[in-house]
View: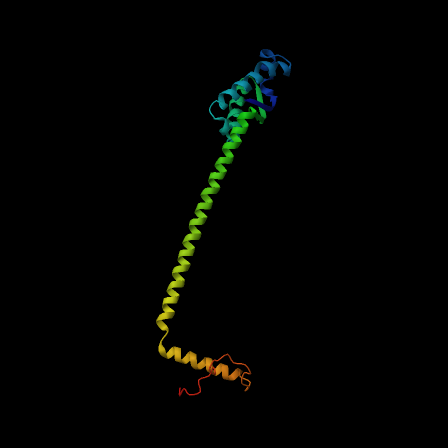
Length: 185
């Protein structure tokens, strides 16, 4: 793993004399003697606590931990950390592909679980709908009586008479007229 970081810092004005006395007047010397070793140590110490996957998924937590450790080390030498950023975690190509495959497999697993839940809900809805329809049919069957059937037959005959234009059909297929004229109902 290779990590690139960006650091912005300044000299604590109250510590300027001590910094020049102990480190020297050049910021290059401060970077070489204090900042780079402190950054390397902080990155190694913090990243060792996480798996490679967690380094990516908990990037903010990792950055804050490294920043805190680096800030403390720099402060002891009169330097103030203004900003710290992780520019890049670089992993080997095969490791990055393995992480990508694992993430993809987890996403597919979650999708399959959601699909299964959806199918279960749809099945329950179908069962509930079928039960409701069966209950409705049962209620309708209970209300069908011989009197109701006779009333429906009479209503249908009245409707047929209302629509009839008074002409008998020219062609019949052996059927008897559709209105029962002998019925005394």
